[in-house]
Image 1 (cartoon, rainbow, N blue to C red):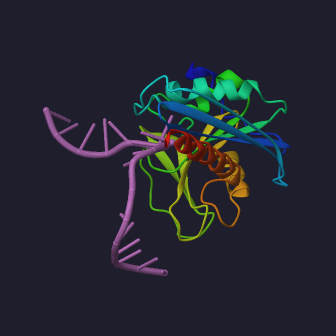
Image 2 (cartoon, rainbow, N blue to C red; image 1 turned 30 degrees about the vertical axis):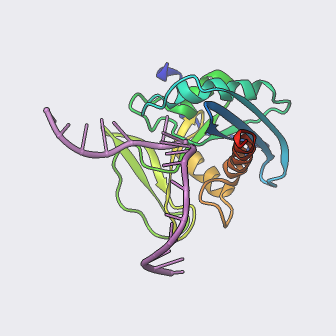
Length: 207
DNA sequence: GCGACAG
DNA sequence: ATCTTGTCGC
């Protein structure tokens, strides 16, 4: 399965990009997909799906917990994103098949993983300025890069999901990270909506 | 064996 | 991810 992951260069620039995020509340999981025009950042479409949580979180098996709900939301999409960003890792994974890579095999689209915390691999300290990055190596293999999307803030961990090069992943992530958000704006937009769902969820449960 | 461990 | 007040720091 990991053999299907390819590090080919993304040709040209994406026209339509998508960002994915999930939230959990009361045994339910909600996935939100935000589609934007690239690079104007205009929101084209937003779809979502909520379902019962199917699996507990186990490091290394995030895809089994999030893919089912994500795929249901994906089915509702009317537009056709040609690049998808995930909140998690791509090949930066014990078996080189993190959420972003695994998802690509189901949706047949180039993907990029952007995690907010370190999972595995080692790397040299990176510069404090926006744009500086340092490769992450695991068992002698470059599996991603720590990227400083905003000067003076914590970095993000970028990795190839599928059908892009690490350089593509770094470049696109920087482009989609405005001058405010640490994670790409497209993922933040999904995160915002995912939290709105959680709020409403809490209000309903509050007698 | 011990510690670390995306969301 | 989620549960949660005040609090240290730029």
